[in-house]
Image 1: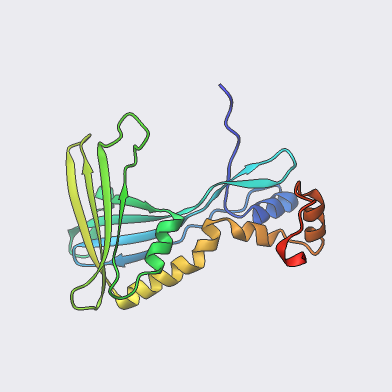
Image 2: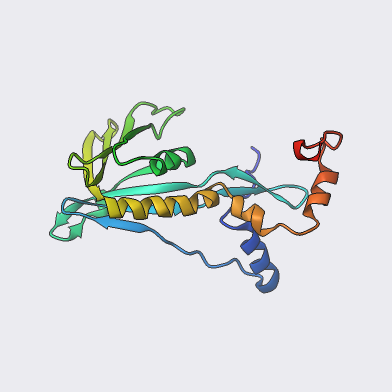
Length: 211
């Protein structure tokens, strides 16, 4: 069986510079945005993209990053049972969907974590984001049906306009990083354009803006 190629998460630029000068990988930093309400809490955390090294010494994006939503029910007053949390991973396209929501817009996502596997169809996750009836914000509702452990649970949390604005702002900021575009921008040099054009296999094709 072939050994899987190593994958690296986060900024390749920082990884390379830190390794070159210190011989060590940069420290990992964890961030998130958590909203606490009477019956549940919602934690929103970005997860970095993955890169695969090429024989040339360059790196190629192998997997886009995502945003992890963690829903935890209350255990007591101002206490939340994170041991019973339910999770939902937003893809780049789904993040864009939420960013584009207007005050009266809604969206719905369906996930099967076991799609393509033997247990396909046994776990069903549905995330609904809909406006609150009084127009004061949106609510996030995650429904999870797990036939493997006989679980049927729904966690609901209202999000105010201000909280939703913070969330959208954070998602707008992190989106290019989920695509790995920051690693490309961080490694640009003044002579990159000429070098890239000379190495491009389509060297005989003129770019639109050079015609």
